[in-house]
Length: 185
Image (tube, rainbow, N blue to C red; front, side, top):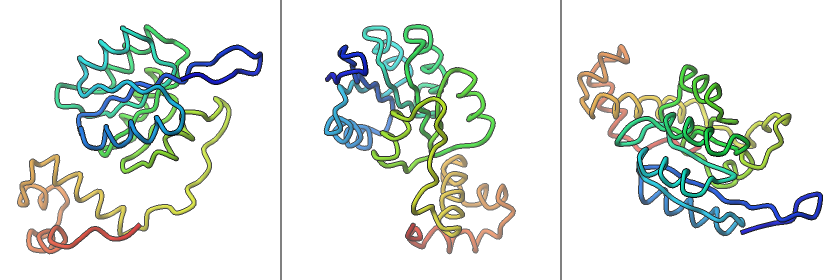
């Protein structure tokens, strides 16, 4: 899909989405197509690099943790084929070290899951000198705590005892937290 640039020339809004969660990937692809992007999807590091080399996208949204490796490898490959592309890292396992690494490799922003299509589009289309607007409805402290516990639980391969040890939490307390539904916003 194309739009018109400030000089009247056609501007391509090609977008590469790389994520190993197929259901989320297809939902995001549909949402971004409705917003005027020509979307290509990939579900692995290898596939993402291959698709980027086939047709260098103007935009990319890449998950950090993929089944066959690290999304940072895709960022590096994208920078080689499309040095001016806008790359957004997206992850549910965010930390400062990976955010810094992503930016050093050429990502322009780093968003935490669950990010919605509006936030992703805003990050993709933001100018290089624009600071992102604060979220209108940030996650509550309870939701942030719950998300962190869920991340550590998944990193520990859903082992309650190991998760409790890493979080310095009593095992039964953790079991009660895991049995509850996630807090709203």
